[in-house]
Amino acid sequence: MANMASSIENKAGPHIGDTGWVDVAMLGSFQPQGAVPQVRRLGQVVYFKGGWSNAGMAATSAYDIGVVPVGFRPSGWKYGMVASHTAATAARTNVKTDGTIVLNTNAALGSYFMYDAFSYPLG
Image (tube, rainbow, N blue to C red; front, side, top):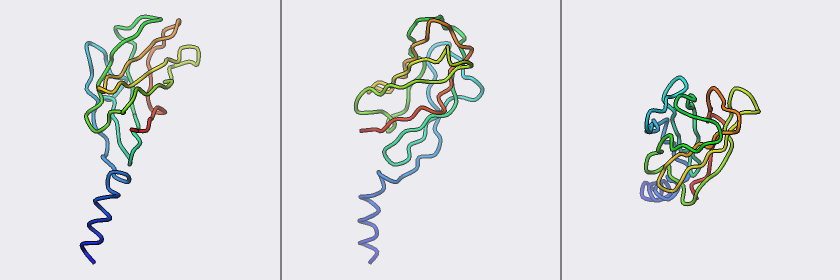
């Protein structure tokens, strides 16, 4: 019976596993908004928490702001929106297959960009 349980666990583990929260590597001189941003993988979905301040950013620009660790990287680029201090300054983001997180700022620059509602499937 133990062999059957181990076999099931080995096959299901990657789909139901929980990595816990892991720090995102910050790039350049960009600063976190509060604590260092983190990612967590639950099964095949990656969730973010935290964000970046606008320190060193300008409006209508694209920045490589961080890198997610191996094991959290998508098989294709993943796009989404991230919140700011107002809806007018929300920004587009994407995570590349090499783990690079790109932030594309709006025409009006937000004070910070929060990733708490951003997630993506690995596949």
